[in-house]
Length: 232
Length: 230
Image (tube, rainbow over all chains, first blue to last red):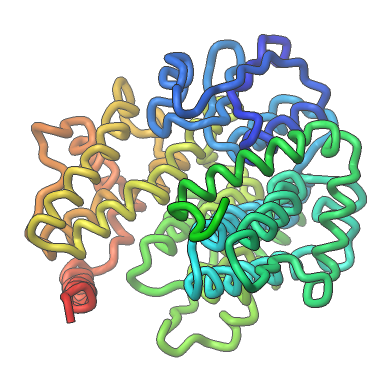
């Protein structure tokens, strides 16, 4: 079963696709990668994810699976080497809880800080910071959320270390005040964890080129905020 | 057996009488024949225990098993499934499991918000809301082709996650004078609703309908007021 062909439909700039890439690499699963041009979605993507029409989509033996966290669970259940979820049901529940928290609280908060302007932006950034602080509490004294090595939550949340910095840099471009999301003073544990995660070889190797990502997101920002008031 | 009694030792469920999310947990525990105590919460006056057990969200449901708490209903369902193996809610096949999780997520992220939105709007806004809700429901209708339940022959994870549709949707429709799931438009979904609602464990555990109507009527009135231009 696990010997059948694996295909990943993704996008180079997508954090959700990155989660799946990390997991595939961690488990040493061979796969074919299909880069989707999101303004111009392929018939294959529309066929494999008719409900959301989004990436990432994993296709295994011709059967598609959508939603990155669902894909991660599938990968863990199908390829048992280098597990990303612990064995204990309570520990698994904790991992699922925090991954959900990342998607339902942290991600929209960061997106909000990225897309809003002025006072609304400050408010969004404050809320994003609060949620990141809560995420930090889930780490406790551990090296990684997964314990001694990276696991489900590290993979689910790792992208924040990069994207939060992008938001800080880009949103700063248009404003007088800085918008720091991950403050080394108020969130030292989370900040250290981000640095540690991004140094893990398989994590580091899959990262998209930073300069390209910056330019790409600058473009997004312009589009979403209606451009800067002054020069670009 | 020692392990069995250890697992049964202490299970508590923090809930409210009306929460659809808590109801899922009741169904799952009863389907697996797990003994548990219920603690009803007054959300306007949350107990210190609830705040201790769910400090992040401060919401129900929360399952406490041998003193350790699990929050978020779909996370709790997975925990229950992994801890009490009888009457499994998920298939053994990883792909089918992924499909069940996908639909449970879809229910919470798309179906429920769209129906709730339609329930709490009026006029043109409601009409548009109903159109949106129906678009989401069409996917569920499609998924039911050739199946009795989302889980196949038996009630499964996705059925439990979507089960609120079998009763709450009727309540929402009454409260908001709207029709979202019509028999001719959604024959499979309509049949599923009946079959699900009729299953013994489900049937025995619906909150009182008139109470639900009153409650959601009040919500709707408040929400409409909040939307009105000031």
